[in-house]
Amino acid sequence: MGFLEMIFGVIGDLTWGWALIPFLVVFGVFMTIMTGFVQFTYFKRMFRVLTAGSESDDPNQISSREALLVSVGGRVGGGNIAGVAVAITLGGPGAVFWMWIIALVGMCTSLVECSLAQLYKRTDPDGGYRGGPARSIIHGLGENFRWLAVLYAISLIASFAIGFNAFQGNTVAGAAQDSLGIDRIWTGLVLAGVTGVIVYGGIHRIAKVADVIIPVMAIGYILMALLVIVLNLFSVPAVLWSIVSNGLGWEQAVSGGVGAAIAQGLRRGLFSNEAGLGSAPNVAATAGVKHPISQGITQSLSVFIDTMVICSCTAFLILLSDVYVPGAEGIDGIALTQQSLASEVGEWSKYYLTTAILLFSFSSIMYNYYLGENALTVMTSNPVTVHVLRVVVMGVVLLGAIAPGATSVFFFSDPMMGVLALVNLLALIMLFPIVLRLLSDFRAQIAAGIETPVLDPDNYADLDIDTKSWPKNG
Image (cartoon, rainbow, N blue to C red; front, side):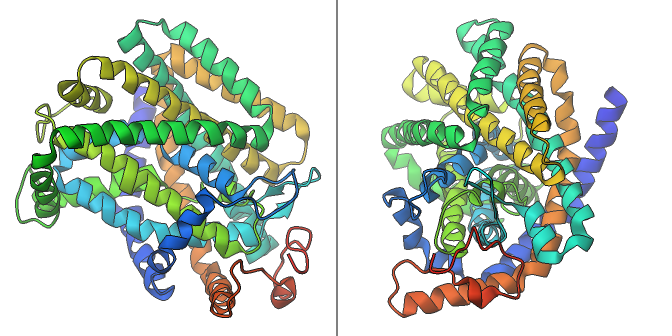
């Protein structure tokens, strides 16, 4: 297994390091300019979904807010705690600056991919919706590109439903064992059991659980970070200065200087917010909305919450403490965050952080499972395969929890994520004119005084959209 890990590790590093990251950044900047900086012009509108009700009266459909919370729950995971700590250690405080930059650009990328997922979604027999990059490829680019959609679906299952869920199970079990002394087998059994109960309820149960867990998880973590900031209020300006000055190369905190800051910030930021990977659109498509751009705008907020809020909380927890050592090797990201928090508010915070990790990781497991289920339905309509996937996911979570070595499957996920992003970005390039068309329609309705724009399917009769999903007059 060691040789295979090395091979897949090299492939993953080549994909993410030399080809994909510059592509994601350049394309994100291009889309931002071409859309008229839409993520900023509609920034205020993003927050309306937090208090607004559903745009659909159908009980089989989930609301825009529920879709947002499910995607936030998927994006916000162990990477927001461990990943940020590693980025700061290897790239210095400047890595945070570049995480912010890629998040602001990624908000537009997310809007584009999620709007397409909404436009090309299909209605399920139970009245719900399914969509995502695979379906956007099939219905947007045509049957000749079905092979590309299948490649995307297989990569999504391998990386998220299997690889990342093994990793999340290991993260939870490790944290519970280290902080609470709970044996891995018990954590694994409980986690697998609860996962089964939730996933057998489908996207509706996942959405309802996320509607409870995510606000509690996010608000609690933000409050803890705010407490540390208040306790170190006079040090905040210096921390902000170090983030900006190191990010722009005015000062150097680690070997590699601004280059290390850019590399770590961009890579960790993209891994965290997933903008451009095409994962979040699978959930975005399930929301019942009047216009595809509405959900695209909402999903931009998910990227903002993940990186600009949650990742920033972790960054300030670390940079305001005396534990952080720039350039340290062999760093355990979770341990660094735990030690940083404990040094400011006391040892009890380790138990709090363990609980936060549990909630973060569990929400990611639910999200990862649904991505796999949605991808599976692109390849087959046999309901037996969905049940098989559910059992496999439960088994993977348990295996990842009780056998740390089993998470070597995570190495396979890295290159699979590279495939996901490359396929998704290729499709986005070809379908981007459709998004500009949707955005023009949305803006025209807003300018005409229509508070909630509605998609008129007659205006898109040349496209392969589902009239059940987009009926006349909304």
